[in-house]
Length: 453
Image (cartoon, rainbow, N blue to C red):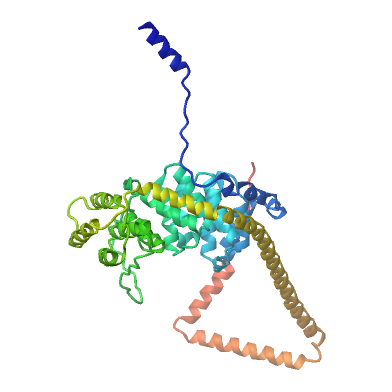
């Protein structure tokens, strides 16, 4: 017994702590972190203090009603501290409400997203990304991929899924890494779909009835795309959108599961009929049937619709066809790895070039803006000089045009006299004029008294 105990102690002393690596598909080089930090070395960004710039831009919007897109871009690229999130969101909304929103620079979108991600402002980031009407921020492919990879590493599949549905909403299918990550994340999110709930319907708790006059009353409209709010609909449409372009066993699996989640049962039925007649090899992954059953339980706690019941009969026919027995999650991971191997270096190279182009673009737009301000200033000075010359000419030629000036004065006096007579003919006109004159005579301007400290 003692020997056993001693050997156990030696084994425990030799125990090494193992560290489990978190899943991450993209390398640190993909984030181009050093190149992104180098933007702060730009003399243009160093010239402006973010705190002072916010005060200037906010005051300009309050007085003039507009801000310049390049000024917002300078602010977004210059901020680093987390306590400037509110100022950034205010300026983005101000820009969105002005005509300058059409001139928003590509670097502004990138800077906003990376700033919020670097400061771990997930709630604000999701609010901005899913409220495009108020903030007008649209990620580029690098931002999509960095965001999804970051949330995958954190195992935060709910927020990862909120990012994954955005390329589908923009009908963007250009970047292989974005496509592969979107499909992978949607499947991982569906393992625990309760982490992303449908937003509650707005409740009108006002007791008073408010009547508003409107010219036309429009019928309610649902576009079945940007108006989607149910996570099952968004994730399902994303899977169907991405699977349609794959044209293989994995793509058909995504399409079938996605259309059922999206509640497009007739479209799924048509696809099944087509696959039964056309596809010769594996139609879908065998795991798909169990996943569909799980999705049904999550979506319909009580009775499921008749259309879905009818569709499940056709899904049972699909079970008779050849299906892939391999692991679905491994296929999804391999799909991502294949896309990363193909596109990883290409994305990095293009992004490094974009950083240089964005810096040049910012300087070019700012120079054009300064030239326009200078042109407007010169035009205002010319108009002022014209008025001064006209007044000076009037003074110098007074005696030559004395009779004409007297005639103009007589015409103005006649107009004023006619207006006075019209007012005097009005009911109680004289009394009103007398009252106005008395108020003018009795007016005493307020005195400003300096208080003693």
